[in-house]
Image: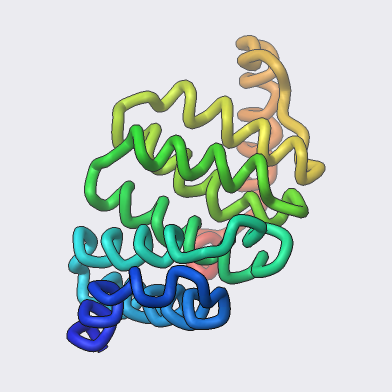
Length: 173
């Protein structure tokens, strides 16, 4: 697959005006990129995925949405694995801007959160994670709980545990 896709990519100039052939080659690059990901060769994967993105026609987010989304998400993920966080951020911003639904953005958000953690920006990652969860309908307190709230939860948990035997606690699933 890799040899064939490499050769076809080298001849890309010969199909510049043929949208169908360009889309077919973009799909082959997607397959090669995913195959490279499964082999943990992320630099090669990023190269195939980027080539696939470049082969997409100008109106690809409207006409070839699923392929566009998949290429961009996979490319962002490979850039995370390669440590190329600037490129990852650019691609994620494109995905967020072009996605049709919030659910289509979730994969990009997850990649961005992972990248922020990898860059030791845990606070930003947590804030983004809470924003995403809030958009999904999960609410969290805006502030850190005070000691009385913590003590109340501790007491409630302690009372629940006191009614259980050791065997019951060990067999919780």
